[in-house]
Image 1 (tube, rainbow, N blue to C red):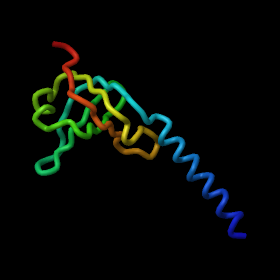
Image 2 (tube, one colour):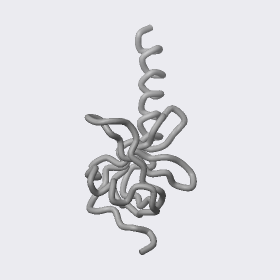
Image 3 (cartoon, rainbow, N blue to C red):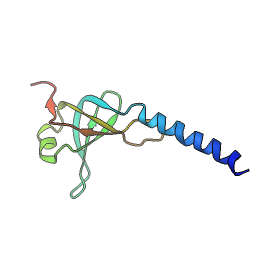
Length: 101
């Protein structure tokens, strides 16, 4: 009896894990850099043409220099967009570059 309930639950969990990691990996985003929230917990975000992403690991001074401008960042997807994801996240590798000089 326990196995008949446990097997479907485990299958659902494994399918959910596959769906979340399907978009994982390297990704390059281009959009407007924004800083939301107040000290001590500001959040650096990027508004692309399709969605808004949290940029993890982009230093606040670097983000302030690009705030309101188009920029390009490359990183690893930390939280992929999906139906139950409020804010997808990208762990930034390197520096953000202005999209237009």
